[in-house]
Length: 187
Image (cartoon, rainbow, N blue to C red; front, side, top):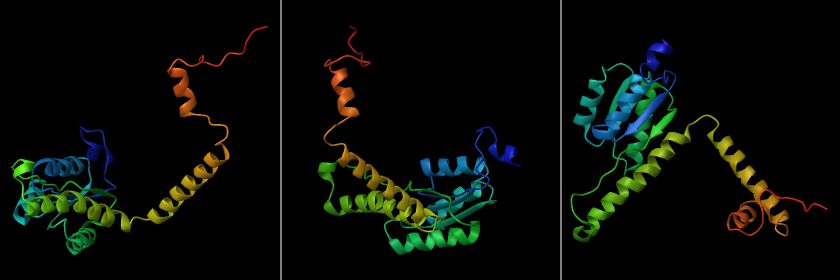
């Protein structure tokens, strides 16, 4: 089964549930096709319900979920993720693909249009990633481990401030100040 799921791509996502926003057409639809071809369970989301349902039907309907989602709206994103998880299981991968850009130069764009672009392209990514990561098993523990590591590195850096080593030192050698590798004078 895993070999069949890997198909020609060589990737096996048979244990993955992938959520893709902006999956009604274009790049998002292509991403959904690739994950589905590699065996993944795929939840396709798009603002245009008819387009995303057609895209999901094109995948054969198995291991798919299609739903309307407005990535600018927190409740819509949360509802979409909840429905996708009820249909296909826990999310393992979230692809924040939804994005827009108006067909006009920036100088001709209205403030309202600019706000719509930023809400979709920035806020939408934030809300999608937040929804995708919030229920991830161990996510908070891994985040805490990451913060602990950063804290230890900052403490180590403070201890070595009087004797800097690393990037600055190597950069000096690349700039022609000194020899590399370090050589001791011969006597």
